[in-house]
Image (cartoon, rainbow, N blue to C red; front, side, top):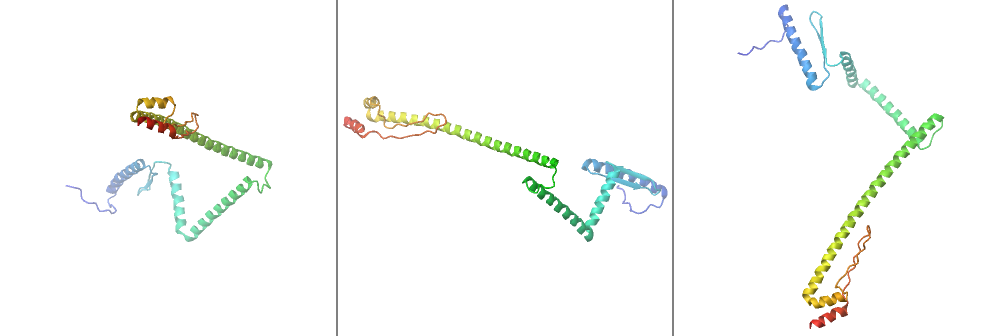
Length: 233
């Protein structure tokens, strides 16, 4: 049979009240420790008994938790107070204006303007900053140029490989044309054609390493082709 529901009210008997306090206090401390470990939270627990005895637990420094609580509480109160909120935003705007003025002044000095009031040490520091910036810019430019050169070299190698493959295909097609010519006109006429060094088609290929392949298609000479046809008749 389950336990009955306990009415939440002050316990009149002092002995029972003390026993309940001791049990509930230990359970509360245990739950606080588990919450801090499981959820990686900052937990601070302060308990005063009815006799004025202090019990506390914190997974970090209790002082830092209390300071953080007070700071957060003050900020929350300021946000709920229109006057305090206005002052807070005015202060924030003033800080941003100051930062903007400093950035503008720094930009003008980098551009070589409004250098009055600067000491030799300040000018030397400004010069060192500019030299460091220039070195960084040059390194970045050289890196970009190096990457572009590598990319162009890779594209050139790829085109050269494609040209070699095209040359191989042209040679295969030329050999197939010769074989077809032999089948169509006979071996004797093909030998005569080879003896005259007259092929139906020829290609001019550039063999330079990185030069593009130039192909030129030439038609057979009319009188040679007519002579071959008349022999067949």
